[in-house]
Amino acid sequence: MIGDMVGNIPKIDKFDIEILSILRTEVRTSVLEISERIGLSATPVSRRIRRPEEQGIITRYAALIDEAKLGYEVSVFVSVKLDKQVDDSLAAFEAAIQDFSEVVDFWLMTGNRDYVLRVATRSLADFESFLVGRLTRVRGVASIESSIP
Image (cartoon, rainbow, N blue to C red; front, side):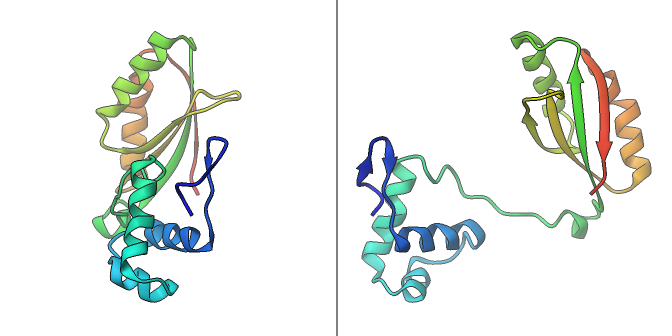
C-alpha cells in the first residue's frame, strides 16, 4: 500500500495502481464509485487517495480541455534553441512565453534544442502570425523548428 516505503520509493499494490489509473483519466470520479469499481470499501479507498496526495505523488487535479471544440484546431510542437544556455537566459525565455496564450505547454529539454513548446491556434495563419510576430522576437531565440502532428 502507498505509505509503506522501500528506500525512498513508496510501495504500491494493485489497488493503488487501479485508483491512480482511474484518477488520472477520470478525476471527478467519486470515492464511492472508485470503491465499487475496484472492490474495496470507501474508507480504504479514501485513505489510499489521501496518502499519495500527502506524499506529493498526486500533485494536482486538472480538467483536460478539448481545444478543437473551442476553435483551436491547430496544434504545433515548436523546438527552440537559445543563443545562450545560462540561467538568466532560460529564465527570461520562460518569463516571455508565459505571456503567450498560444503556448499551452512547454518543457526544458536536453539535447540539441533547449525547449519544446506546444502551441494551439485557430488556424495555420494564426500560428504563422504567432511565430513571426511574437516568438521569433523573443530575446535570445537563436533558432526555431516547428512540427505539426
